[in-house]
Image (cartoon, rainbow, N blue to C red; front, side):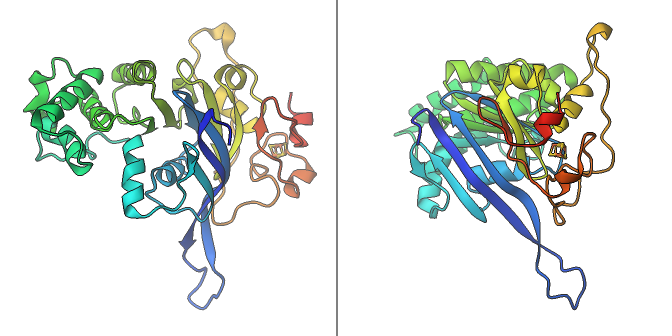
Length: 328
Ligand code: SF4
């Protein structure tokens, strides 16, 4: 394993049992939620994981957190295989990999004060020798999350805070454990547009001040441009393109990435591109198309695309997909 890659994911798959087509059918069917994902994450790197809803990005986050068991594949963290762990081992890893969920309204217990919410992970993990030590950690996590001065918020309840402040509480409850990776699953999609930039700026700051790596999961490619180091584009359970932020935003290779980029609103009319509107819906992940799984919607698909499945597009590597010969 490369020592720079402190999180490494290889051949990761998660299939869920699906209903049989009929009562009498013996055919086992599966939802291919994550279907062969490979990527690495470096120390304090920010990767944006982008794709339409249902592409498997949230399931991937749950696999990384150990909240779902993989069907196949390997997840390594800091040189150690963490794919299948017992409860004690999982708890230790969870301290290092924390998740920020999408909905700050549902992820906070309405009966607890902000102080209790942020203190709870310390109690669960047995961190801090005494109350003073824990209080210091709570206050530091709150202030690093932009809840300043912390004393103003400590005794309040979630319903007394705005959406943005609640999401800061969620982030503080993750930070209090001093994690090395934050998995942020659509952390701004439930917030007002005016607050989204503040939360993204906060995550950008934390990666510098706390040296935290961030996996920023989003359906909105336009929201990641200024702070992600790399962008991974997911489609139907797979990463179809991965590269530095500039490479992917300025020279996208995969037709799906091009389509996602083409519909991002651009204020300057001279910089607007032709919009690529994909035909049809994302296929059912139970019946994944043969060959390239994007072929039913691909604007430049060829006959061979129904038969051959290209490897994902990775800059700096030879890409064997026939599609790259076509797509300029
Ligand atoms: Fe489109 Fe074919 Fe490339 Fe798939 S392999 S993205 S269908 S051109």
